Amino acid sequence: MSCYSSNSSSHCQKRTFAAGRGGLRPSQERWGSRESQPEWRGPKDEGSRPQADPVSPGAPRGTCQSMCPKRELQERESQNRLHRFETLAGTERDRRPRADPLRAVKEYSRPAAGKDSARSSDLRPPALLFKTVCYLIDDIATMPGRTPWTEAYNFVFDRLRSVRQDMIIQRTAGPDCVAVLERTVRLLVYASFRLCGEPLRRYDPRFNDTQLQESLSWLMQGYAKEPGPHANQEEFQALSCSRVLQHTMELPKRLRTSPAVALALSINRAFSERNPVRLLRLARRLSFLQSCALHRHVAACHRDLLLVYSHGLSGRNCRFPLRRLAELLGLEDATATAAGQLCQAAGLQVHQGDQTVVFSKTGFTETGPPRCTARHDTLDDKRNDLTLLRSIIHGCHLE
Image 1: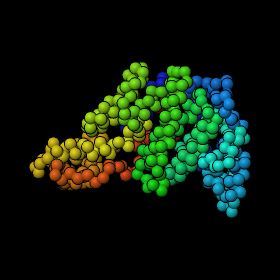
Image 2: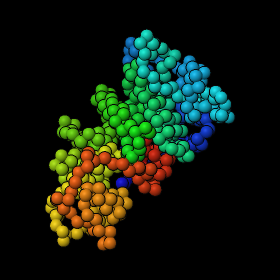
Image 3: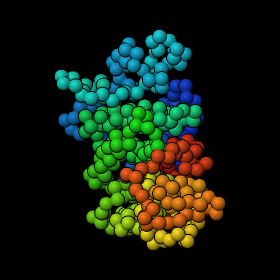
Image 4: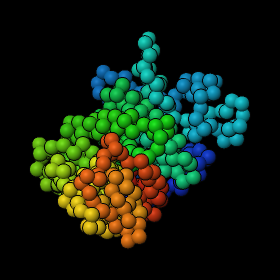
């Protein structure tokens, strides 16, 4: 898969602060630099911050000026419910670890009957919500050394739900809302690929997909309501096409004919026509995040391709090279071993000596809905650099 890039001509400048290690807390200087640097929002975000508060009239306005309200912080500290990412350095082994106000983030909680969820002191204003999301991405999700990544994901996933909850209560709109949702969608799309092989106790794909679809729908509504043009709209329209694979011909011609959306529509058509060879060939041109979005359909494409070849090339004396099959399947390493495993799982006879497979329409078997069970720690060596992942989620341009 190719390195992610955007159609924007601007490039994301390097952050002026250094990424801290897992146990370090963000200093006041780092927070100050985030507030004072206009490029922190990324070159493709929706321009400068609006002068007016982007909260709907009549909605409660948040006054909390920390990532976690003081009341919740004290409550969770007294109940020993702090995540290890939120504890004060040096108190981790204490019977009751202390909270670090600069690392603690408001957790998601379901509104209870009789509970005032609209208390202004518990709500974070839009600008702080954006800054909180940036902290979750830069200091948790993409910080080297945080293993396993499932722990970082589950922490960030919960805190992102809390961010969206605050935005819903305040009926937040405008550039900050769009910027938060864009980063949320990128992270959840990547997680759907990265964690697809994890057991349910560590990662729930349906829960992730539900939150992803809700965030993506909200983002699409934001694009429709806010005056454009929106610099990132093509990227997310293409992601939406790659995910849901449904008709998008109602899109404006400007979006429909853009390279990213046009490619996604071609893949949509190949999927609808059950043409796995064409789909997998087109998929090689996708950006990194688009590939992650399409990944949920790849196992079905592999099954369809093997089914087509099992009927078209059925014969005892007809042997097909596994390495060539791996290329057609678009396997990451394009090795005969990976292709052979898929063939054996489909009931096809594999000859390890000459690295070939014998297709047979009677031998092909289907063992339930196709599902990828592989673990994707990385797509390639370049993608293993979490600094690049951070840039991808922020929407920066990568060469």
